[in-house]
Length: 163
Image 1 (cartoon, one colour):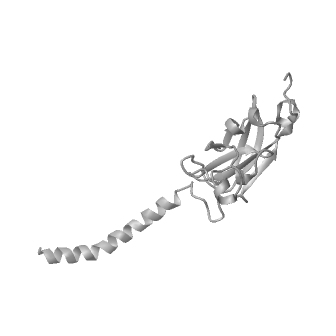
Image 2 (cartoon, rainbow, N blue to C red):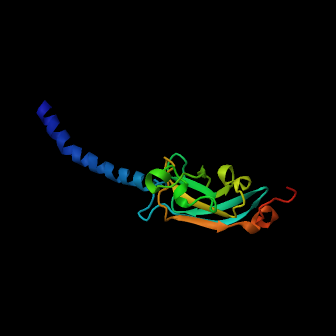
Image 3 (cartoon, rainbow, N blue to C red):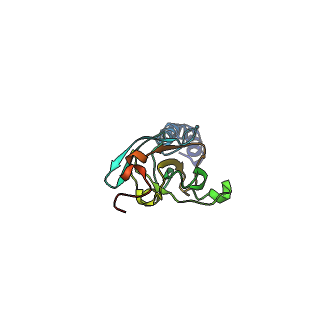
């Protein structure tokens, strides 16, 4: 086979070969559960219950959290607004950055860090929102908060029994 014949056959086969790969590329993209849908990454608090000295939260989301990608930020609602619980607080929303706990525990998460019962400073509302790999709040309109005062030691009072 001459060089020219080989080139002509390759050029004819190349589009078919590339076309054969398109379904594979589409399938891989469809299996990226961490990507936000068109409506945005949404997460809600399905339930909260006591878990020793902390609280166990169960979430429902339209994406699979991964702390290296899109993940969850949990914080005490009386302490910070949703616009404060990401690294983009000042740059995008013009507000002081607050404290939150970032994680990808899904669907069940036990409060810890800035979302710990020990860090609540009298707050009685837990909140969750989605954030990106840079820990920026994705959409300040997409968050959920639940009152937890009746689940806290001492019924949500500012002081724990014996303190």
